[in-house]
Length: 215
Image (tube, rainbow, N blue to C red; front, side, top):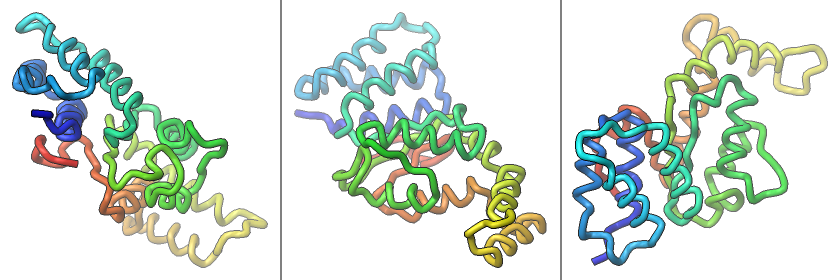
């Protein structure tokens, strides 16, 4: 019987972003023994590589994460977008990471929140024809801090610069709300966009609570 591959990669993603210990990861991998005979070769080889680690040995999380990225990167039909949050240090870095993950097959890039929203609807990018996919966001706390209040204030102030073509009233209000501690940060806006797309499963540290699910 063919084991649901999206369930396997979804569960592995959950374990990795939550920094699960080697025992928990190994327990899951060993639970797959004998159930992968009809699954794709790349997935079977991945599981066997990490099952073969000596019992009790510490799994090298960096190596496992890199190997997992290669697995899902080479098999886009598994529907996994891997975001390395540690690479996101500002707004430009956010779009660099999104373009690396989603737009490598396109001859143009996105650079706005509206563009990011459009990307998640599909029609272009890595998962343009997918009915659903998952965003696996590692080190999300770093991304959230990097796209926090300071970055967002600078972003709004830029929109309010002399000769700016943007809606001054809108961005002035946003600036004042943020200064008052009531507004959204840039990361909050990104999160709101992701959550607005029902076909997107968002996997990050602490979410979802149940590590075993179908995407």
